[in-house]
Length: 282
Image (cartoon, rainbow, N blue to C red; front, side, top):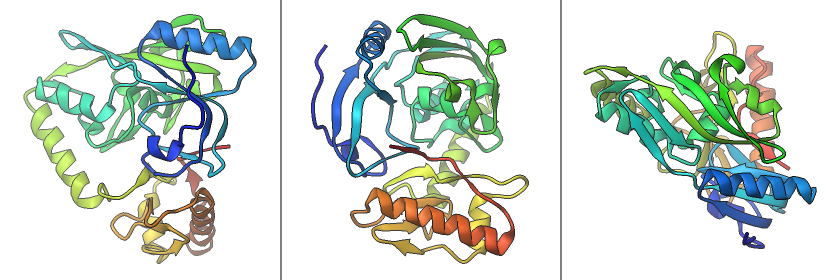
């Protein structure tokens, strides 16, 4: 095993924010991931598994532990069943499956995270969510042991899953999709809409807040007059209010302070209490 020291996390995240990792190691296979997690457990080292680097905010002082960069990138198909490594691009999976005429993951197009991250968060959009077509997850527990968990043994909900309460790491996921000639047109429509309504050219971690019950977080933030509001180098996107963008060398604290301000103002003006979707890593 080769651990790199001092790698800047801002270079590995879509926010472009984050100081050095004490240690960083890249894994390209399930056995490698098992070995690293078992090692961290044995040596009592804290660790964080990082995929595509979206939906996370690292501190400017970095991470005092091991960042495991998940590069498990395989994608195997048997008819409508796709078995995919956790490091694989979720957006790419959505477009590839739709192009092949398989429906279910069209909504993934444009979601910037990895398959593992999507399962962890039960990522969703446009009426679809990850667990709809998920059948099983290959999981490495905190001792480095491999477990194959069928969907029936897992719990999930809006932007939540069993994995948020477990130590270890998602290694791969299996999806069973439905043959459909409508998949590709639907996927193209989704990606076209996203590129027109979300700030894809800017550095962000994706949607900052979960939607409130019966209310869109973006709409609530916009109604509160916060589009374009900034603190330091962090700004509420003028294009989509549920995105905070790194406009000019934002610090992690700028984002934290801006998110807190948005949450406070939205509650004062609308009565809705927003909940953070982005994971702040301390």
